[in-house]
Amino acid sequence: MYSQTVIENMMLLYRIYQLCIALPILLVCTMLTAIVTIIGSWIGNAHFWGYYPGKIWSIIICRVLFIPVVVRGHENVDKKTSYVFVANHQGAFDIFLIYGFLGRNFKWMMKKSLRKIFLVGKACESARHIFVDKSGPKKIQETYAKAREILKEGTSLVVFPEGARSFTGHMGVFKKGAFQLAVELQLPVVPVTINGSFDILPRTKGFGFVRRSKLTLTIHHPILPKGKGPENIKETMEEAYQNREHEALQHVAELLQEYQLLLQNLADQAQTEKLLVLLSAVKILVENYQMQDLLGIADTLYGGILPVLDGESR
Image (cartoon, rainbow, N blue to C red; front, top):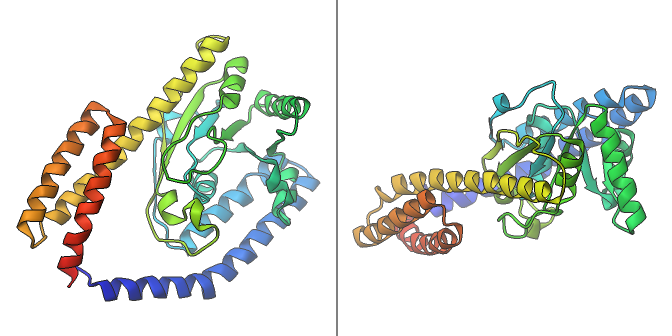
């Protein structure tokens, strides 16, 4: 295993690389992407220029920062069908993951405040992305009217139904706006699960240094429209939430397998046996789908593994 000193030195080198090499590249790429999007959309075909420059920009950002990306489920959606994609919002890197790797031309529904970002806000406006204005009932209705127009043209829509990035990495409560649009227009809703973004750059860190971690994008099977009315909106929301919660549990199960391999190589046998018991309990909870209990035991597991790792590194 790597010693603590080696790990700290590697993290320091990665931060120096971010500051001296990656940051200048990303700033230039961001400005060029915004300018190309603005000019291309002004000349014509905002459908093309509003998507492909942003897609390339997002892929470059992940590559320059050496962020590994795994995508699952492209086969679950039809290229010729318009969808409402609903994704959990772990952190800033959700944008790059979806834009670069969803594989579908779409429009974002985004916060109105993003319009104020230099060049980027103008590029989003030129590309006909949708700014959500919550300043009053009339503005909200105008926002949804624009979204309806976009969807009727055959373009897909990407929405973060939680409304904002998570402070904890856990999934929050869904707002019903996107689901209401999908039910009204009888369009399929596609749940999308993001994992790893919170580990790279948590919301609580602002625009600090990123931590290298794997990003995973899972595209679930579409939830087909069942009819119109409030009961169908609620049913679609619940099904989308359950799909993403199930994927989160699968992600925990994968992490547990990695922990188990790690624990088998630890020297402290007593601590190892105790943690293996916890691993077994967590696996049972994963299988039985009890999320709240799982989170409590996961915290215990995390607290128990640190002393063992510290002892091993000394």
